[in-house]
Image 1 (cartoon, rainbow, N blue to C red):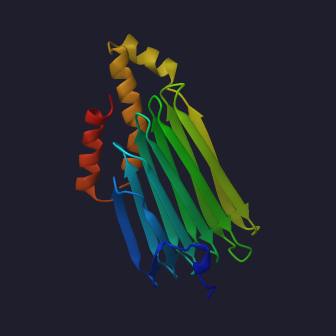
Image 2: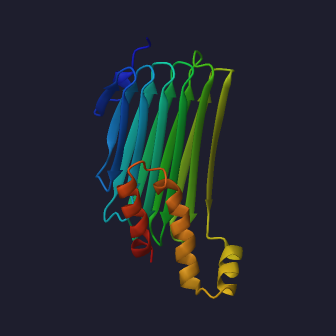
Image 3: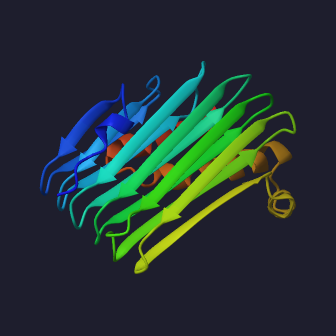
Amino acid sequence: MTKPSLLSWKNMDTMVLHKGETFEKVFFEEKDVNLHIVQEEGSRVKIHVINIHPHSNHCNKIVVEQLGAACSTEIYALAYVRDRNCVTTETHVIHQVGGGYSNQLVKYVLCPFAQGEFVGDLKIAKDAQQTEAHQTNRNLILSEKAVMRTRPQLEIYADDVQATHGASTGQLDESAIFYMRQRGLSAEQAHQMLIVAFMKEVLQTISDEQLRDELMDSLDRIVQ
């Protein structure tokens, strides 16, 4: 089996998932998630990094290396950044062998003066044939004074793969706001509903039903 590139990820907490093992965790408002996961055959990873009311800067970095066949990797991140705070999300998903699956979905909502940064690296090695891998970054900017930096990177060295990546940054849909106001909602209510709907796409992927419901219920109180 290919060896993990441990020297490339110094000063990170490293975890090895052995054959068939599963690791699933929600990092909620944790300061600076810093994790390196090595996957052996048939192992499964599902990670959520949620920063929906940070009162300081956060810098999160997750590295996952699939070294065995038929592995599954899911990484979801959500940041709702206000004031002059900054949240950085850096992901590296590396498919070293074939038959694996990965999906990354990273979403940001940036209020006035807030900053966000996403660096996403998806690599499919030459021997990783029949791999399916996806990377998506969507950002919602609520002020011209907010700043989002996004750098999705895709490296594919195999020829029998399904791989997609995309990034988009924009503002609230004015036509949707108009439609909602025509049905009696105020501008503030329409804004809140659209922002909450945008954020829920990430929270809906949490497997823990109680935690998922608690976080989704909290959005109406958080989004102002």
